Amino acid sequence: MDVYRWSLFLHVAAGATALATFWTAAVLRKGSTRHRRVGQVFLVAMIGVLASGVPLTLGLIERGRPASALFLTFLLLLNADGCWNAWRAIRLRQHRDAYFDGLFWCITAIVALAGTGIIALGVVIGAPLFMVFGSLGPFLLVDALYRRRRAASDPLWWMREHYGAMIGNGVATHVAFLSIGLRNAVPGLDPAVVQQFAWFGPLLVAFVAAFWLDRRYGRRAGGAGRAAGVRALS
Image 1 (cartoon, rainbow, N blue to C red):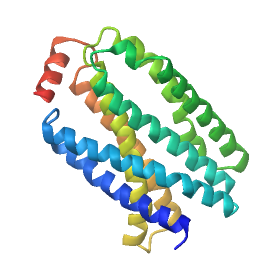
Image 2: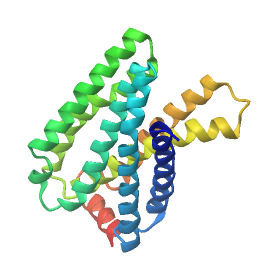
Image 3: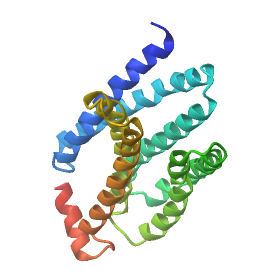
Image 4: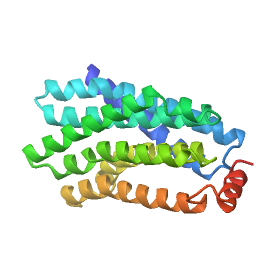
């Protein structure tokens, strides 16, 4: 078995672990020991996904698919940023300025520039998928500016950062699962339909989930939002 196939095997195994632990952590009581431990396993699995994704990217280049390689590189960068922020939000929840430091803005800017490049590539080759997902890069930069301003008066800023990053990571695991699993489970489906549902379905659910969580924990640092956050962690 060559490096590409080994990397693909590890990528799928790590992705399956990430998918299972994502939902396990989601149903466990937030802030509990089990929630934290399962969340740690999820992040380790995502590191496996990211690490195995690098040789897959190189393999796409060798197979004459540079556009797909660039797109995968952007997705790996996007997920690396999500994993990094999910971990840092918990570690630095008492240090708002340390979280929104120079490194945070540097990485966010890189993701935004990479996303802009993917949008341009999508326009050139006529790939709407590239344009939609590439737009997440600039969107995250604009959203980060808004989140930083809101965090100044929000004691639950770190929770929002954490679950926002975890939702983004969840999109990646569900896209991979649906792209492969749905196609194999229902082979008669139109491949184009499978692709559209697999990519855009999780993205739509992510926006809905983020909206619901923001409403649950309060849009501002008011009493109801603060109390809900305390209950979630107790």
